[in-house]
Image (cartoon, rainbow, N blue to C red):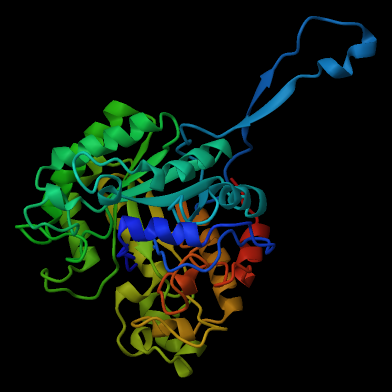
Length: 435
């Protein structure tokens, strides 16, 4: 799924936040006023009953004060997450200076009834220079996830320009150990609060992975090895997720690489030696989650769709089902016990908006009701397959924290540009979440 780049300077962000401060809106799920700040981004089955800690009362008393001596029940999150439990999650806008992290986590936990939340951390924003420290952009979100007993997955991307000879953020640092050092800093800053880390994002695209060697699965596996060792040294209970690939058509290996071909080479290079879970993405397009790529042309949507890709040019990348099923087959051919972590999935709908993001015309074909139906169906499909460990919907709150309907994360959101719940919000909240 297309990654959203933060183009605003740090000072501009801070000024915007000051300008947009004030009391919370009365809307049930709106926790920010309109803003142009947008976060870089695109779940699994219901967790088991929460672990509880029972704290015994004080000294024994008489029958008359027995009720006062009842043990206090304190809910805690499940950590480490069991290998046989499906985790339901959602991605949130991870910038603590936009909206109220308390409100966000209240909603995810209390209304959506989820146990996992995902955020993305831009390394360059924390350390724009070697001696700069701007953790305030993320600390509040991480802390509130922990305060609400939510398991937290972070995707860590965006190398500072001072770590790259190229002088930009588009790729790993020239020295992979610098990324490992940042991961260690993150974990030590928030001990016990980080439960999973996704190591990079869509590295089969040149807009995400620009290096002297170009797009290279073998280089990525070496990068993953360094990150994996650093994470496990700092906290062995953290789940390490390999960076999810972007489902693509046949690529030239300059601008992008076919995700199936890339995965084959990464597996051959030893990917599974340095991951607890294999990351996966899919952005739904305009076909249902149970439709294979070679079946799209025979669906009713084929006759009416504005966006013609899945129907006129069949390819595996159009289909959620084909992509997830094939990833699982490839991975489990190497290690039958390895599962996927679907770190971004969703269906965009521009119903109710007068503009569609450039390159996302398929959002016109999905109604709000279809969006809701597809999301629930996809969660159920992943849970029932037994091939997915964690799943994160993209997204909860980019609708009212993005740059308007023309911003591509906005049609994927389960709230609209005013923070009002779309039908998919209620569908997710009401969805059965079995173990």
